Length: 138
Image (cartoon, rainbow, N blue to C red; front, side):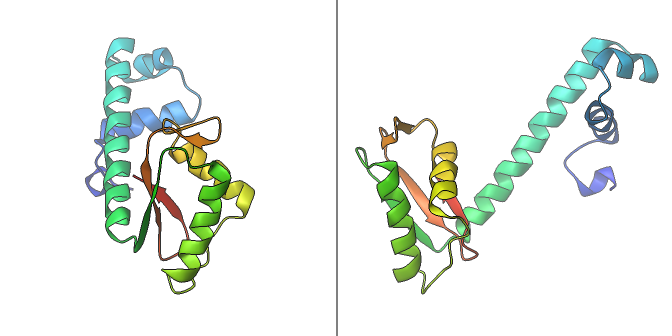
C-alpha cells in the first residue's frame, strides 16, 4: 500500500512495519542511520495518525447507525444486553445482533469501560446498533 493512500508517511509506514516484525527502535535507528529518539518520535506520530484515522472511521459509522438508546446510571450490564436485543428486534426491523449474550456483555463493557463499574452503569452513555448488527458506544 502506498503512503499517499493512508494518513501515514513512507517513513512512518516503514518504522511501523519494522516494529511489527519485532525490531527494536535501536535496531531500526541503526538500519536507517538515525537516532533511537528520532525513531521513537516517528513511531509515536504514526500511532497518533492511526488513532485519528480509526476515530474518523468510527465517526462515520456512528452517522450510519440507525438505532441509538441511552444506558442510564444504575442500569445493570445484563439489562443492557437485553435492551440491545429488544431494540434490534423492534426499532431495527429485525436487525440480527452479531454477538451472543456473553460476547455482547464483554464488548459493551470494553467499549464503555469508564462508564461501567462492577457491571453497573455509573455514567450514562448511548449505545448504537448498526444495520449490520454491530454495537457502538458514544
